[in-house]
Amino acid sequence: MQANRHRAIGTILVVALSGFLMGFDGSLFTGAVRSIEIEFGLNEFELGWAVTSMAVASTVSIFISGPLADRYGRRTVLLLATCVFAASALLAALSENFATLIVARLLSGFGVGAVLVTAPMYIAEISPSAWRGRMVSFNQLFIVLGTLAAFVSNYLIVRFGDAAEWNWRWMLGIGVAPAIPYFFALLLVPESPRWLAMHDQLPSARRVLGRLAGTDRADTELEAVLVSLEHEAQRPKPALTEILSPALRGVLIIGLVVGVLQQITGINSVLSYAVVIFERAGAGANASFMQTVFVGLVNVVFTVLALLLIDRVGRRPLLMFGCFGIGAFMLLASYGFQVEDEAQSSLLVLIGMLGFVASFAFSLGPGMWVLFSEIFPNRIRGLAISCVGVVNSTVCVIVQFLFPWELETLGDSKTFLIYGVLALAGVAFIWRLVPETRGRSLEELEKALVRRS
Image (tube, rainbow, N blue to C red):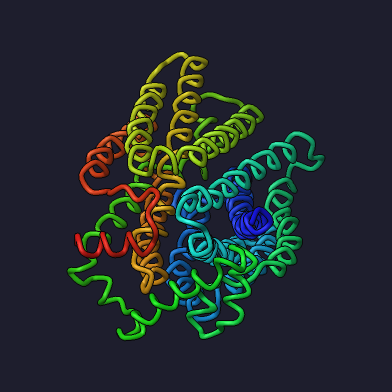
């Protein structure tokens, strides 16, 4: 039994490592933003497009990745995403013009969307309910570890790079490095047993369940899956209109509110433009890169905290407390930009950004994807996560694209003030709408939430 548990955890960790690849590839651009702006002579809207083009592609990818994972398998989609990450990193590093760079960013976005949807889906399907939230959160942990690794990589390239004009190319091209070994690691993990059963590959499903849960429990778990699938088979294939049905209205609203809230509080603006933000607050070039590393460290530490608490404290309390912290620290950063003393302003903004990232990391960061993997019925989970993920990613695109314009038009202080107010409003939304899902099976949640809707 212990060996089966270790094997299951090992499988989950390998799948969750796709998050590291996504976080690493997506965050390398943060250090290259300023150099690329100069290299290609970009205005504020072109700069916004350079940053958000990846999110645009991920929006499309999120919409199609769920159905693709349902049709071709969770592992197959993750393998494809890994190849996409390697190709996009190489193309970005070799870009000779702005158009080629955008193509590379769009390609990377397709990989991001695939990982965001498929990895939590796979993990939720093979994790016992008692520690499912913790296991799904591992994906978010590896995303922030990848982000930290990217920030450290950027800092080291700036600190020790001999040719400054080549730094941004090294920053982007190094994304190839983790993709190659991860591709071969994925070949060692099995396909999801739920997916295998869904496609009538019952011997394979039983074999995988035997490896992950033990032979004694394999037949019992497979029987439960088959009962669920048999019930689903009596209904037509999931369609977009079904997600909009009155029976699912409640879970859809929950998903949409949490999905929008995660982005309108500014997390991807802060992570994508961190170096720019710290420079505007008065930090020097090297100091800005170092402070970005601090952001990455805080992100990792508090994601680990979420990992430890999410199955003990629950999803709802963490989301509420985290949103309150996000709002409070954004207001501190807003005030920091109003302080005339440059050293004090830089310190207050740094504290505000670190506190903001910490609050996000143990709440909306992992909490949103845990909820998405739990609240939607088994039959339409892939399609529903894709649809709500599209909304989340679309809001991300808008927020990131407008951020340079907001800084120049509204000013630093008002921009972060808006983020803070929206986060505080989110506390009320969560208190009113979001149920607690801790310790309940996917089937139990489906029965309760759909009936309640």
